[in-house]
Image (tube, rainbow, N blue to C red; front, side, top):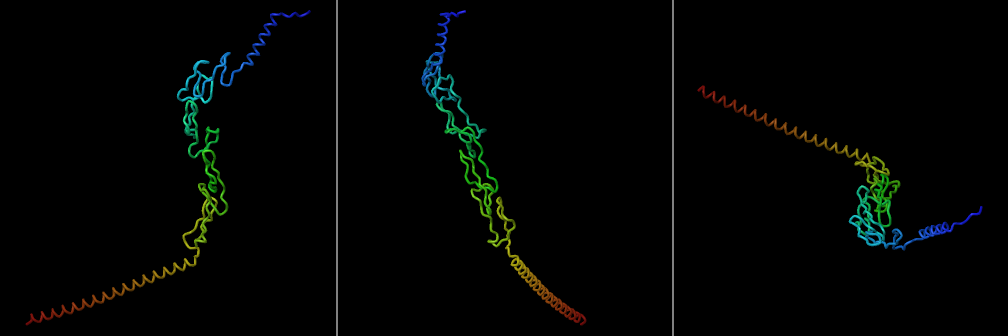
Length: 251
């Protein structure tokens, strides 16, 4: 059986294909946006569409629009909250969003050319390490390990040399490590000289004590002799006076 073409069907098919082709190739210029089957002029930066293809309106406070657009709403301004370790660097305007930066002691770990989205706390160097490069708002702290003969508690910008007790004529009590300094005694490292000095001081002290004791004893003995002589003299005088008085009474 031979197939017959329907002219109406063919015309309808052609119109349908043309509509698809036109809709797929329908584009607007870069400064326009599509609204239905029209190309409407975009609203400028800092504004939004109030009525399509008719008018624009400035963004409200707390919102912004940083590009030409065909949107009915502006973007909400970003907040730099303390909970995210960020603070405001530049406040939001109707033409640009808020710009954030890290808090003191933090550095930006996720960022664009002009803005920071996430911050992390600067690294703290461990004991035995020193700060070879301090952290900034965009870089973390860099720590390095101390070499032999030096130490750091983690807060130094360079490792410190251990004390040399011998050069100070002091006794080494504890050797230094990478985290602590050497510990020196407060006495000379030459014990012989120390012992001799102590013996001399003790001997002089004993001599002074004995000398004072002897001197005190001599003074006490002398005072006792004088006291005894005075008492004897008083007794003799009293006896003589008593005899004279008795003799006169007899007469």
